[in-house]
Image 1: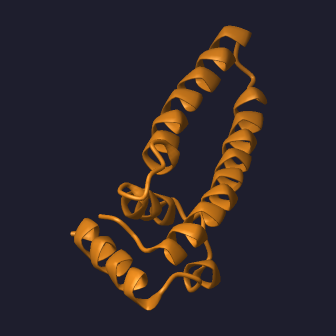
Image 2 (image 1 turned 90 degrees about the vertical axis):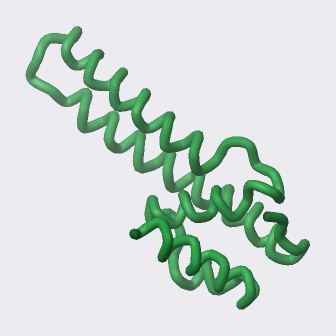
Image 3 (image 1 turned 60 degrees about the vertical axis):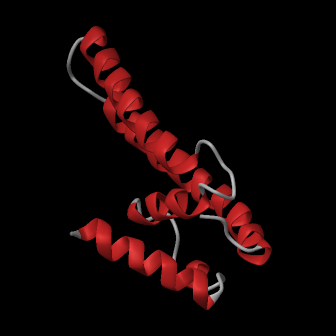
Length: 108
């Protein structure tokens, strides 16, 4: 599903904002994971698993950035709670309706 140029421009800008927020969240989780009382190896494994898991989430939300994938990437970004309602209001009403329709389907 392609999006119109104005929504694409908003998406590209918000994509960068959301990516920074996601990376900050992951790095904060890594800090917590490294403050463990286990062996260094256990701490390493905990961080490694965390990064692997977060990398999969990152790929779903941020990789393969094209106009045809923008809507699904945005839904994944929204599901991660990385954008505010105010930021989402920057999209056209038409695009917001498409987002809401996909979110309601994905909820079940």
